[in-house]
Structure formats: C-alpha cells, structure tokens
Length: 465
Ligand code: GDP
Ligand code: MG
Image 1 (cartoon, rainbow, N blue to C red):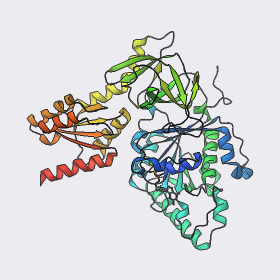
Image 2 (image 1 turned 90 degrees about the horizontal axis):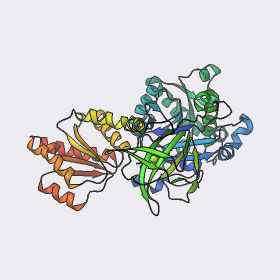
Image 3 (image 1 turned 90 degrees about the vertical axis):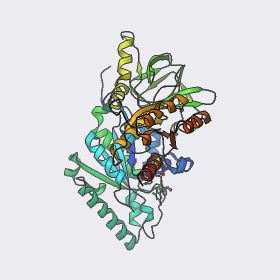
Image 4 (image 1 turned 135 degrees about the horizontal axis):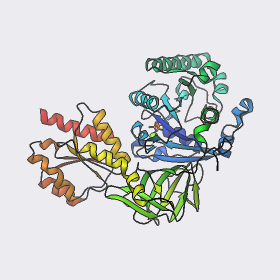
C-alpha cells in the first residue's frame, strides 16, 4: 500500500536531559504512575517505552485544546525514557535515528547543566527536532498550584513576585541556550517566523509534580508531529525494529523488549537477532505489550497480540534469546530473503564495535548487561574521562572465571592497573571473585555509570600517589 498522510504512525518521542531534571517524573505525571520512586537511587538505568493512545492524548490536552482547537490525527505517541544522553545514541537502527522528536528537560532552578548541553549537541548533530520542558516551575517562590492546568492559566494566578522570579529564570535559560547557539523562546511568544525556522526551539514551562504545562507539552508535540514531521511519520511496511532490553520474566522465560518503529512483527515470524556469539534465528512465539499508558519495565498484566504494528514497544518471546543484545536490530526473514544476508546485516553494528576495540591492546575489561549499556560505558570512558580509560576487552552478562583469567594478563604485560574489570549492572559469582583475588584482578561493580568511573579514578589516583 502507498504511504499516505492519512496513515501516520505514532511518533517516537525521547525524553532527554541532565540527571534529576525530572524526566521520569514528567512521564509519571502523564501516565499517572510512580515509576521514579521505585528506581535504584532514583536514577533511570534502562530504556523504557510507554505507549499513549490517542484517547489519552485527547483527554490530557482537553482543557488547552478548548482554545487551540487542534485536530489530532495521530494514532498515539510512543515515549521513550532513557538513562541519559548516552543511550540516545543506541536508539538507532542501521544508521538511522529511531527518534522522531525529543523533549529536552531543563531544571528551571539550575539552568543548563552538563548533560543537557551534551544532549543539545547530540540532537543538533542528528537534526532531531526538540522542545524544551523548563521544568519545576512549582519551585518558584510562593507558587500557587493549579493542578494539571495549561501553563498560561497557571501563570495568570501567580503573584507579581512569583511571576518576576519565573520571568528572570526563564530569561536566564534563554541566554544560556543562546550561548550554545540555540535560539529559543517561550512557545506562545514565538512569532510566525520563529515557527517556520526549523532551528528555533520552543520552551514549555512545566511542573512534573503539580502538572502545570503538561497539557501544553503534549499538545505541542502532537502539533509538531503532524504539521512538520508527517512525511517521516507515514507508516511503512518495512520492518524497522531494535532491541531495548533482554530480561527474564517469571513464567515467560527470557524475553526481548523491542521498539518496532515501522512495519509488522507477527507471531510465527522467523526473526534474526544479534548476540556476542553470532546471529541467532528464532521463531517468534509470543508478542506482549503492557496496557496503554503503562511502561514495559513495570510488571503488569500483559496483553497478547498476534501482530504488532509500529510504532510500538513490544515484549518478544522465543527460544534461545538469552544472549540477544540490547541496541541491536531485529530483522525478519521474508520469503525472498537469503538468511545469510539478514544475519550479516543484524551483526553489522557489533562487528564494527569489535573492530574498534581490537586496537587497544592495553586496557581494562568492561562488562555490562546489554550492548546498550556497554556502548554507553565505552563512549563514556572514551569521551568523558580525562585521560580516556583504555579498554582492551568487552563482555555482556555474568562475569565468569575465564573473563578474570583473560584480563589478568595485563599484570604480565606490565600494566597491572588495567588488570581491572568495570562491571556495570551484572552479577559477579563468588568463584569469579575468589579467582580475581588469586590472580590480582580488581572488579569494580556499580549500577550507575558515574559510580564505576569514580571508583576507577580513585583507584588510579591512589596508584599515582
Ligand atoms: P530524572 O533523573 O531526570 O529522571 O529526574 P526524576 O524524574 O528522577 O526527578 C528527580 C527529582 O526531582 C525527584 O526527586 C523528583 O521528585 C523531583 N522533581 C521532578 N520534577 C519536579 C517538578 O516539576 N517540581 C519539583 N518540585 N520537583 C520535581
Ligand atoms: Mg529518570
């Protein structure tokens, strides 16, 4: 069937920004859930997907739309919450970005922070359109709560002092954005020229706690999607699918959470997945989604499907999926396809990553739970540690004795500081620990990237003293 403007898919919306700006809380507000408080250290470690139905978008924007009168034709919206800007880079499939539009969350009280600036540059580099949620307006002095109301209604009832604080903080944020080369303005103060200028960024003041401005940001995302992005949102039948996470679920065995952007996935499909040990071909035995407005990371009553149409997040069940890696593409073998071609295609990203590594002969071992986390860590070590921490080996999942043995050769190579494993969010069984002690290998573990880095740099500092 021809692609048309009448058959749009859900836009894939990614929430980005510095840690603690309120990304997860903002989503919680829209979902009416409380994911944020259940997280380790309140920090998002894995990518989550939430599907909002058209009806939810309509109810959650009803008050604002009384005046805006926008006719919503999107079938819904798929919102991805990420641990940080690192994982944004994993939201891609064979070279192209899977993210249609982004929300960059900025804390009104703190202005632009490091990760926000990095996110900005990343979005610009990719050419991904975005809006800024200037969050935590409720923290302005004497803020009068107007629960879940459009932001302009809420501003109308604030005292002069509160408004003044809001104005001055918002204008500081604008100046800081300008310093990063980004033209922006409070969205209702933008002129027609600004809207047609694709480099101009709208700012929506919000509170993820009391809900002011949430209507505004939802409606604005719908408007941008339909008016500006409709070409790329025309649904197409070619499967575009990527693995977000692999995990065991009680009663289901190993499941693979996927983001299906375009095309169909069907029960019975012969699908090809990427693992460290090479490609695997598996029949899809089940396709599950959480109910709308619920997140895939959260245990809930799953809905079973015979067929999934993108864009949607889905939990795939099949045999032998234990070693599938997050951040890798999923492809289906069609009647006219050569299975070997599909395998090579599915493996191509990992192959590239491995080629890059083989150049570091001296360096630590990095072990993570998923390719997504691994890539994030590697990128962090390469680009955000000074000097960069060299990596000589990578691994996914539980640390085994053989991994310890492998990295212990750094002691013989005369660089004992690299006889180290940085283990991110993976189990370390006792025998691996004991063996590490015997052969002088250190294992640092953490489920927050920054903590791992801190442990390693502290260790390096101690060495140099
Ligand atoms: P994330 O790291 O960006 O996902 O941020 P979280 O959603 O985990 O929020 C970080 C902290 O800021 C939590 O303690 C939230 O309760 C708080 N927070 C988030 N949004 C708001 C807001 O709009 N107003 C206020 N007062 N606090 C907020
Ligand atoms: Mg979060």
